[in-house]
Amino acid sequence: MQYDRVIRLALLLPILFETVHGHYGYILVLCRVLGSLQNVELIYSINYGKKELLRFNSTENKVTAYTEYAIKWADDFNKKPEWLHMEAEKAIADCKHFGQLYLPEVEKTVKPEVTVRSVRQASGKHPAMLICSAYDFFPKPIKLTWMRDDKEVTTDVTSTEELADGDWYYQIHSHLEYFPKPGEKVSCVVEHASSHKPMIYDLDLSLSKSDRNKLITGAAGVVLGVIMAVGGLIYYKRKHTALIISAGSQCSEPLQTIRNAEEQ
Image (tube, rainbow, N blue to C red; front, side, top):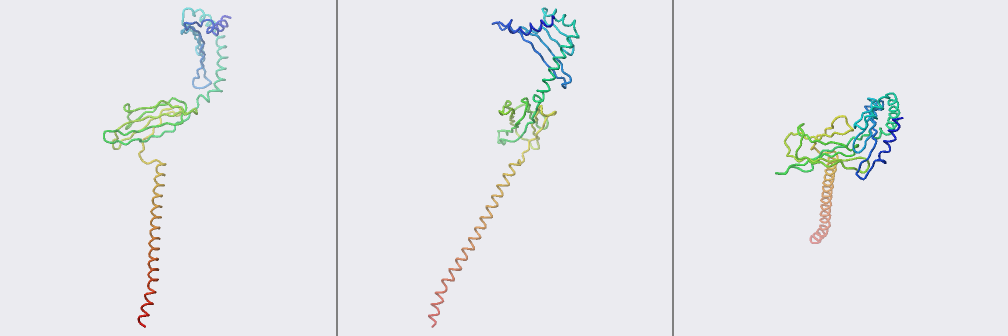
């Protein structure tokens, strides 16, 4: 059949027509999942020398020619719509099978852990610096945007590329230099496939939980040190007073003996 011959020819294009000038042929098969695996569209494209010759679309159940040379082939295919539909259904069944195996992994998303903090306070003519960091997210594409009072900031912003953690996850950091204003709200907006809507994280200049714990621990240590110092001082005072009293009593006994002897 004519269709079979074209398939074989297309498969052999890379071997028969690849030259030192870089001309080559290839077949591109796309399975487009339209919402769910119950609705899959097949695109079958034959290309040669950076030009597309033929394309089949299962939704239209039609072959389209893109060069004069391929028009006859397209006409021959389109005279057999039932056969085209049947062959497309076989390929779509394969698409659905592979989709059931691999789509759960491909579509896996992990929400980033985001922190917004100050790394430098404003001083004179030197602006303050904030950093918005997103950790342990997947997949890679992500967008970080700074907002000041709900208005996007486009200047004085520098960001790193998405950095691989080496364990399938990524991290990214964005810096903002600015001069703070009283009562101003600064936010970092994160857009990622793991959330259907942008995630907004406001800058909180109050102490974090870990910093509060460190402060409480330090204060407790200072209080304990003061208590121990005061206790030691009281103990020393009492001990010192007892020694003086004891020494005084020991010295008074000989003196009393001498007085008694003189009176006699």
